[in-house]
Image (cartoon, rainbow, N blue to C red; front, side, top):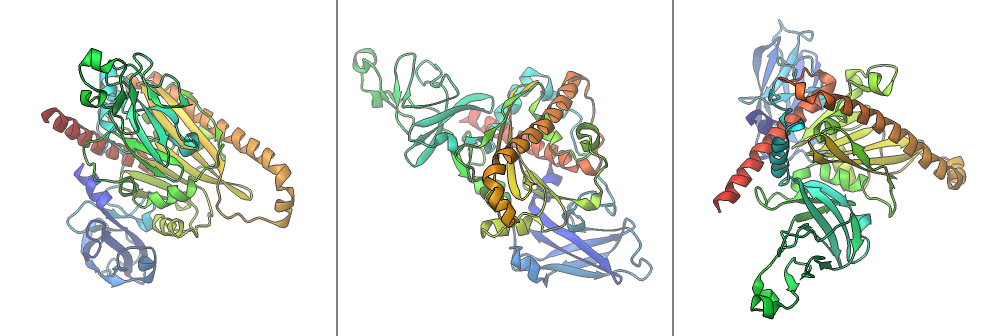
Length: 487
């Protein structure tokens, strides 16, 4: 866990090796103006230490502190340019990768899944383990739904969070969320998936206001001896925040000072730009007969595409870039830009897509952008846990507002081709998600046989990151639950 916290704190890259010199940069995100020391390794042996204190304009332009975080190190003559080179922040376990790309052959300790707990699969089959897991994850910022479903005052939708039924409702310009149970006799306040109207219990007609206080109790003075406000009944409220059209929530407790923007980090402006939805996005909802973790992890697996999706070749390491930010990760295809540069461009409303991108937001959200020539589409997937072996798959598919390389012919034919294009995008998206679903369901059938840690290759590195984030969330969640019991 300590290793993960270090990796989420630091960032940097090993950019180039030329002329006998190693070039790169490193920064401590918690102390952005501090200058770090970087250990340079040649053939697994410490060759020397460089100071990351040189100014680079590209770092400053992408918001990496004041830009004074670069280093250049002259290798000993006997090493030259041919030996395996690696670098890490001094006195830590944070290794700088080559341009933040995965599968760094120069790393003295290439990952094979050793950091994953041998009992990582307990909650895939055990009911009590699953309930404990969900209770802890309920304190993480989690996607609950989308704002187009809350268009009018009084609109609400029902969903789950931390294994508990909850609902989210619009009150004027404010969106609020509550646990879906009456404070009186615990009857569910919302008994269908969506609707519009005040919060009134169908069991005894208790009425709640926008703050979750019981303000209307039939025969209150006669039956309870006081007025409704003195009864003091109140719903359990959720923390609610939005990013673009995405509505996130969490149960209070734990690190409540961490805003959604802090939680998403560099991913916040990216999701804000990507996930501004139309009023009626396409939906591809369904059930997956497998645990939510298997469904989430297959979206981080770039090794299965040939076998499951029948692609004609395996991707090369040089074609893919992996990025880690906080509890989350991203996959970039192509060589244009970094996570930091995309984040800055999205924040400044000047991002122009160039290739496929997918962002995996812990715990159970996957957001991707892809090209359906000449327009860019976004695919939002929520893997909502229902039981150890069942996942509710909620999907939204829509055309983004990002600039497209549109020709005159495209503009003329767009009114006719948009319907066809949307149909084809839906067809192929469903085909891919169905193939993933079937693979996960096959794995679930023998999940009780999962023993030990998996063997992970370079194209599965983000699964290891996910499991490390999972361990951190479990520890934080347990601490929050323990603190609640003591109060």
